[in-house]
Amino acid sequence: MGTLLSCYLMPHPPIIVPEVGRGEEKKIQKTIDSLNTVSINIKEKKPDTIIVVTPHGYVFRDAVAVTVFSSLEGDLGQFGARGVRFEFENDLELVEKIVEESRKKDIPIAEINDELIKRYALSKKLDHGTMVPLYFVTKHYATFKLVHMSYGFLPFEQLYEFGIAINKAIMESNKKVVFIASGDLSHKLTPNSPNGYTPKGEIFDNKLLNLLSEMRVEEIIGMDKGLIEEAAECGFRSVCVMLGALDGYEVKAEVLSHEGPFGVGYGVAQFEVDQYKGTSLLEKLYWLKRQRIEEIRQKEDPYVKLARESLEYYVKNKKLMPVPQGLPEEMYSRRAGVFVSLHKDGELRGCIGTVVPQRKNIAEEIIKNAISAGFEDPRFEPVEEYELKDIEYSVDVLTPPQPVKSKQELNPKKYGVIVRKGYRSGLLLPDLEGVDSVEEQISIALRKAGISPDEDYTIEKFEVERHK
Image 1: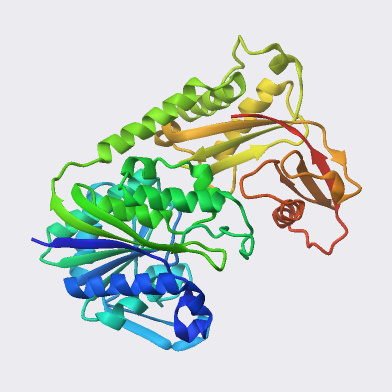
Image 2: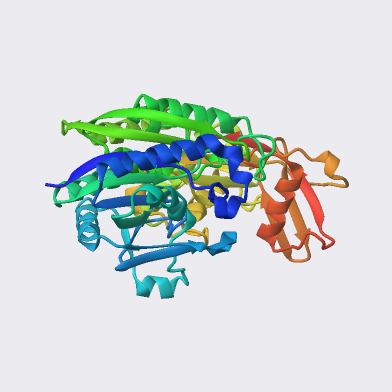
């Protein structure tokens, strides 16, 4: 019977490697010391295999990725340190068991082989999210096989379930295994961050590390998705998989360090595995998710309820829903542009709207645009019936656009913008998470329109009445 020995949260800034940092790494000495502590801990356990889940490998929207090459190799050449190079034997026996257990749970798996590498023009080299943690591990212990995987943008509960599948595979093997969740915390931690700054960054880092130190798993999996997104992290989903691997165990958790001198949060933590009780949290996590969705449904106003019912009706009946009776009078009498946005598990699932009204009234505008958001957004596949229970809706009713003579007239929290050049146009709604400046708002709208910033474009602004 195989054994999960321990798990670790390890950051992956390339600058922490002396051959890359060339002295700058001394600014994150606490993190270096903690990574060495973790690596010595791994050496003492002498695992047969180390599993690494990374945010910078082969990340897909709809599947977790597991690499199936017999040999795994890479270097830090893209960071000016080509001499830092590793090659590991892939534990294909354990990989096969992980894939098998995952598919039993209907967890979508992308096996990274030559066919996928060619189809998506991917690199076969190990990513820095794997290389940097293993740089420290191999300084102390190097006689292990590697399993390399990347999380997908799946629901947090499903990533947790993937972790459970990993541990089931470990227990059915004869391997002693260590699990590394590779990931940095907020990328907007301090005002000197190159990614921008939000005070939510520090809130996110402190909250996650505090919850991890007390293994409050339900609160971690149920963390506010807006906070997670605004923090601009890359390690949260790695943590979800790791917590799933620890499901059913008594765990002693310890946060070893946290710092962010470069504006990115680096947290190091270790999770010592004790007795396996076999009592799973998975069913409760899914129940809590259903409860949260039900609470949202109960608070829907007529605009949001109409959007939801319109899409649900169309998915099930393949035709437009008639305008229902009993709506507020203005939804029958007023005309306006309307945007309907769909979110699923914190991720955008579709967004379509009209700047100026195309239908007889707001009610008809919502019905048509809700269906378009579910079926005509070119960024996404059409919504399927099984997804309906997890989709959250918001409806924005627009005021008529007004021309803008100066950027001083704009405010990304109050006004949406439309940029135009000839037949090209791009629109961005106001008060979007992560869009904090006029410059950023216009830049995104220009990219959506395919307009260069140095072209002679026009700007319009509008306000919205947001229902969510």
